[in-house]
Image (tube, rainbow, N blue to C red; front, side, top):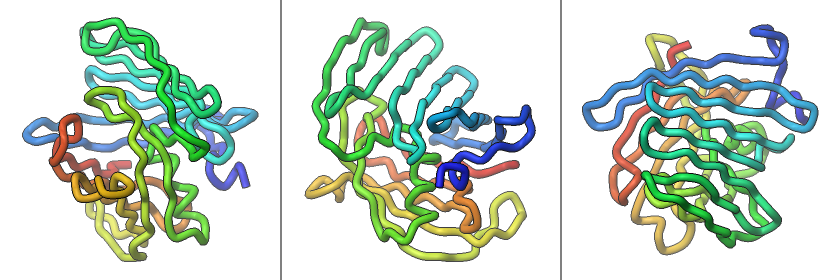
Length: 209
């Protein structure tokens, strides 16, 4: 079960490197994701030009801890403690210390990784928590497996699973993100997100290699 989500390849032996291109409005950035196997789960490191984050995940790919650094702006650490998320550090230049209530549902901060569990299961949908990037408030999301389809990314064809993600409940009309994952192993291929609420600008992320 564990190794189907956090496999061990060479680079070195327990790391996999993925490269993406992210476009937010007119800005384009290169993104590197590094997936590292651990004894109890895996660690996903995300590197951008001025951002660096690390997500510590259990064997089901639920987030346990998450750290985030943005040059000249934020240095944060978030940890799950039961049904709370404890946020400490500097956020947008101001000190923050919050203990945010959630519930028993999983926390998925690195959705491009954590949603693999939905892709590779027989489940139709998953409800989980994530933190909004603009204000660090927890939001409950619902991800639904919509279809299996063929897509082309970077000139290469892939058999993919399309997943639609929205805020749960009546807030579902406010924002929508669509993910495509490789059907065979759940590797993240593409994301398209609409601009509707603060902190979630229109964006597109595509797999490079």
